[in-house]
Length: 606
Image 1 (cartoon, helix red, strand yellow):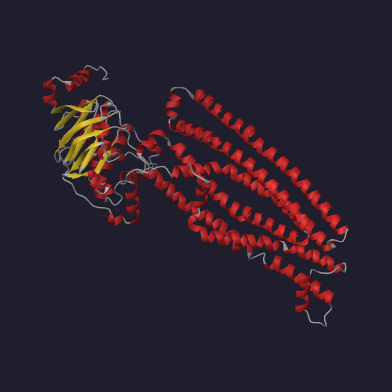
Image 2: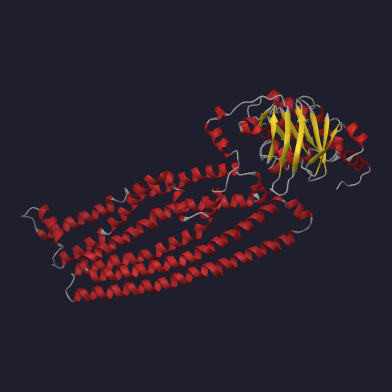
């Protein structure tokens, strides 16, 4: 779990600048104390009472002996007030306020990039358990609260605390008994406040988790809105969200906000009692002649200033307490273990030219491969499969037989628990993962489409593709058949997740995008299973024009897609059961024959 020091480490790149700006802000807060002190000394001059000896010595050294002492003292004191008010006014914003926000904005920039890097390097299994709304909500809240908290803490809270310490020192020099009372009251108030804030911060952490769950579900509703409407579950979803929101409200209003209100009620009572006590003691000391009238005004003014600072300090502490949980959860997110390719992303980002460039013949060998997401539940067992260059191999079998897992291992989303995968005789774990993946391409069952133009999506993997290459890939994938129907052709905005394209059009876009990578190994993962017959036929024709031009791996439930494969591999419970051509496997009368018969008769496959 992230600690408070992790929150401080967030700003470590700008510590020297932070120290400078906090010091400058604190000094300005201390300089402010000169005004009530000088005002008290002015009152002493006007009432013919003596000045403090150090100040009197300064006046005696600065003013000619023939000058009027009273007028000289008034002018000198007035000059000091001019310096600490008028002269300071235009300087302070640049020496303090500017740097507080400058640091906040710079750290937001830096850590937003770090968060995006973390999103890109987390292993795939993380996203199997956390939806986009949960992840983006946690990151956004954490970054935002860090940004707004720094200027408040560094620019206000810390300088205000320094001011209170300065006030204590001033009162101590004037009358130590009042200073001791002042110190005790402050220690009590701050200790009481801190103890209660610590308890409330734990509740804020629980609330943050509740809010994350609500945002996560809201994101799912938006993502799956068609399903929600199709099943007419709007009322049910609203009911569930209403329950979550009511839970948040009850916890926030009666568990947290009520706690803050109780805290500040007691705090105000103690503050006002302390102010009254200081007033009474200062008045008593003045009446008895222990302090001058000027000191009476000074002590009363600066003590009131100090107690007045307690409320904004407490409010800032409350704001920090409310934000602490989300900042803490951001750091917990950033501490999640990255995937095996994280270091390689940093290397590719820093030195793009250092990424190894490969060119493979496309010979792939799954050598005695075994894998399981859990150690005691193997998904693949002793897979031994050799795919020759430019060969088309189909992987078929029941759901859960391990077909897609085999492809994930090929792309190094995971590493095998036993055995190895060789490409052109090289263990893929020994290759630069970025350079290796650039020689592979995959077309998924659901093609991921970004909200941009059709062209942006086509060249996503190869931004430097020429117009000729784009048109050639689109002709092979039959994208050209529908692109001319779009209002702006290749520059048409396809919408979030490609909602303006049909399923078949998205699949053809995915094939063209993969071809533009000019891969040595091309994978079709259930590329036609969710399409209607006409769209499936179009995709099959596009796939047929690709077969033989490169190593191609086809995963399919519909066996009509794999008839022309050079080799069909039948998987069952993570093992290879049968291998052969379409006709050979039909004649063999095994699992493939049974699957084919079930599909031909229209029965479902278990």
